[in-house]
Length: 119
Image 1 (spheres, rainbow, N blue to C red):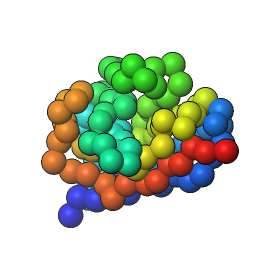
Image 2 (image 1 turned 30 degrees about the vertical axis):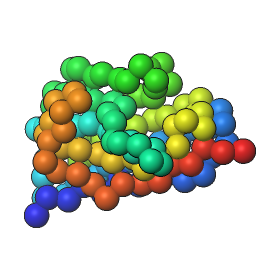
Image 3 (image 1 turned 135 degrees about the horizontal axis):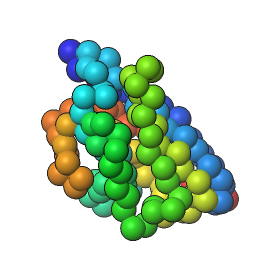
Image 4 (image 1 turned 90 degrees about the vertical axis):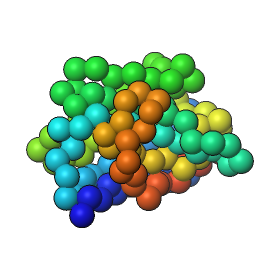
């Protein structure tokens, strides 16, 4: 059974940082493209970062480019999203997704982790 488990969310002040983790079980994440998506209150789910299966390609939404970094630790079967210089508009539930392309998600989702940026 494929499971993706996100962690690392929380409450942070504007300008702060968080690192989200997406741990895979029942799957080998290094074989798949992985995307991070977020869903803000009252809005649809949008991609914020994407990394290719080999790790050679990454893409970012314009709104997070230069502030967020997606990376892999294949030994830990985990994909990370380092988020710096956080803004209130980064608030939302963050999900990882396996197997899609940039902006076209695959079929496996995690349960999400809440990120709230507020003073």
